[in-house]
Length: 192
Image 1 (cartoon, rainbow, N blue to C red):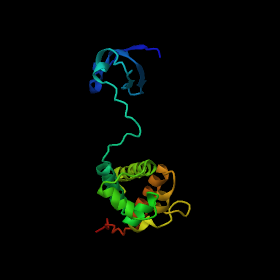
Image 2 (tube, rainbow, N blue to C red):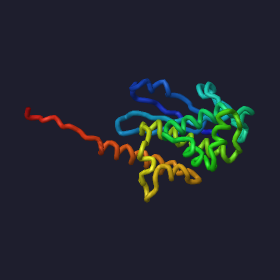
Image 3 (cartoon, rainbow, N blue to C red):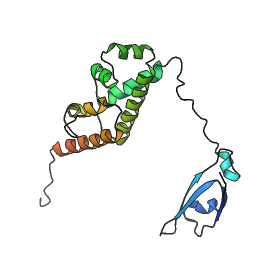
């Protein structure tokens, strides 16, 4: 990979951007919009490069499949998050994790480590729950069983393998819209 140096000058002092003027090593994009502002995105090389990039070392690689020996705190927290965000009972939680009984869910909460495939499924469900929560959708309630997308409910979407994160987010938006439209609003009379 070849390193290229970009030199640019900033004409305005808007937002303190003039501090960025100078040499930049690594890959970089400079985008200038019509208002004259400058937006910049840097991709530093793993050697650290020169100047300010040396202060931002690359993150260490995480070995895939290396889980702590006591997988319970992470797994238990993930299960609690999934259960809380989607308002599931233990039987439904077991179903979306791909198991037929509730016993493994209780065992995982006590400290048992799930199989790697099940652990990957729990991590994917945790990601979906975090996305749902970040979007501010709230608990689905009765909409968990209501057909939303192509006659499939949110619970059906959570059961699918592999998870379709975009469909789950779309369902969350649809549930929020249905909830908003069902609320009765009292409009103030502007002539009183």
